[in-house]
Length: 155
Image 1 (cartoon, rainbow, N blue to C red):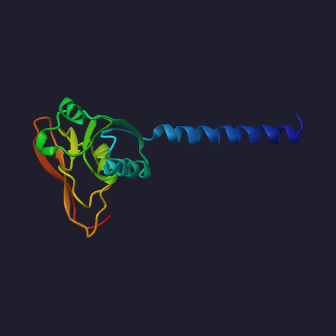
Image 2 (cartoon, one colour):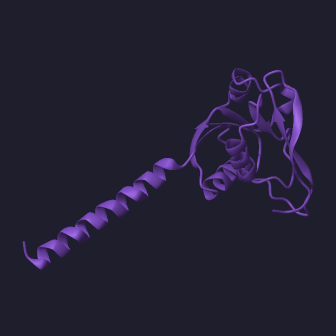
Image 3 (cartoon, one colour):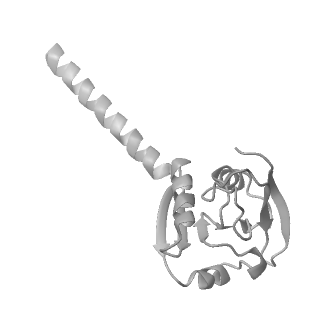
């Protein structure tokens, strides 16, 4: 084998390894399955926020978002405009990507999801100014909540 052939093989192997790392990196993205109304622009902006934060996104436009909420044990006081499934968790409303990442990393005992009830003006996807503080709530299967994160200034 000539020196040139060895160098060409090494280059080919390096290229193959680099492309497999890119593929593995793309596969490693956590999938966010979002259920929303097709006409909701703020929901799409939240989906864009999640994608920009490194999540893979899959959107299902439906007028039956309430049935998704009920099926995943989100109680009506926690409801917002869209519902997402991330791993084994439910994410209700405009929860910041950083809070979802923290939830996935910490896996708090008994928590089935995070919620921001209603549509806080300053949450991701709403992005209205001036900034208005809001809380992200963690909730369990019975609908009991605790404050998971306080947002009292822009990120």
